[in-house]
Amino acid sequence: MSRSGFFDGLLVGTVLGAVFGMLYAPQSGEETRSHISKLKADNEDLIQDTKQKTEVLINKTKDAIEEGLDRLTKTIENKKREHTG
Image 1: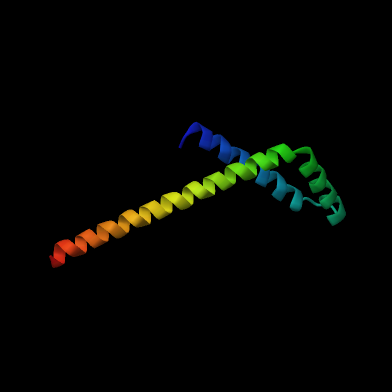
Image 2: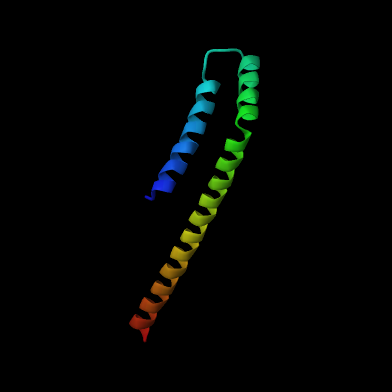
């Protein structure tokens, strides 16, 4: 794993951990919503950066899966031709 990927994962994990920690903290719903709103407002740049990095990672993952499936399909077709031809 690249150093950049590690820190991206660390960033996403930190944000998710903070959100889940607040959701399960013993306080009223109104206090929790207020806290989340303040957290979102204070970290809008970080949230947008994390969102963009997550979207890039998802697209890279989809591309890698599609490429792998294409290669697997071609390999299977070649093996079938070898057996029948």
